[in-house]
Length: 176
Image (cartoon, rainbow, N blue to C red):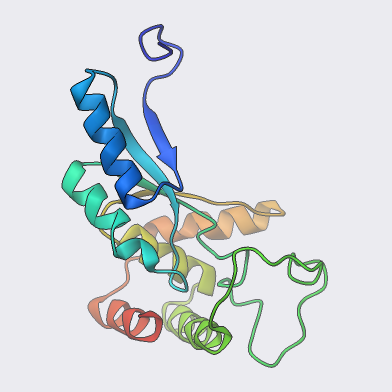
């Protein structure tokens, strides 16, 4: 109804399981209703579970993917490092526990690689993490957040960063 009234241009879903997405797409087709054009999901170098079903469904069904918390609540920015105290003023310092980290050693290995690749390109680890996501199949856009203008401007720099084949292989190897 909202699409027909012109109040909503497109519809999408957020955090559906793969079978929910497909069931919804089938029901939309069957009932001749607007189908989802996008899904909003959690997907990062540290949390790649979306590659099992959600990303293949998006590619197969022509859905765009909007990634929420692409920097894992700041953990993939490079400001959090292995064996170093949590930076004051950060969400983790305040006790934030989202998104859940299931393998802390793997997280720190990913951050080490992000920092190293960032140094090679003269950019931040955050830009590398975001550029990796933007290069992934099906990913249309990222839902970014920041505490200040500098963080937003840094994140925007990921749009022009092109990771080479070696960079992508290194990131894939450390995060799979």
